[in-house]
Image (tube, rainbow, N blue to C red; front, side, top):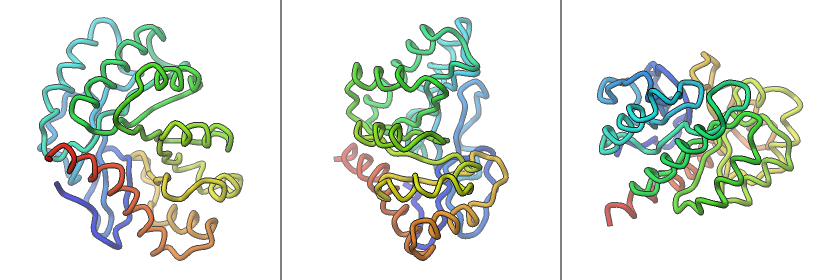
Length: 232
């Protein structure tokens, strides 16, 4: 499996990646786009059914797409999958299709990337009900400290919303969380991942190179260890 190198900036969640030296991107494939994973620029990818693009008519074809590319060598996780109370179909349908993606991630022993907007109770309830065997990574997080700590207590990892994490109000949150459970991302926004790393490193009082090393270790713990277990 292609892996980040020491010294790389890891962008854990992006779209339509463009290769840049020294930046390791994880491309997110959305099932409704029906893209061929062999054609992406990034070395690795995740794939999932985003609640914005889910309805009763396409639920089966979207699940078929996820299963159809589950054997792609560069697929390191499923998702983004999850819940959105501002945009998307009924919560009943979101719950049902989310549960299917949890099942698939367990079958292939790969983590699940989470999208969640104003549905944290539903997410935590789904986690309690599913008792997943693989860890979950909440992407685009911009919530409060208590919520972040609650997610971590459930064994989840957190990747911060690119715009939120560079604001001064994110500093205290960053300082309060164990660094071995965090990731950084651009979400395909065009934001500069290097500037994001610089701000977060300054908040944590460590050099950028130390933050790179920490997030590389986090990547290995979340994605590569589970892959090794699968091969064994």
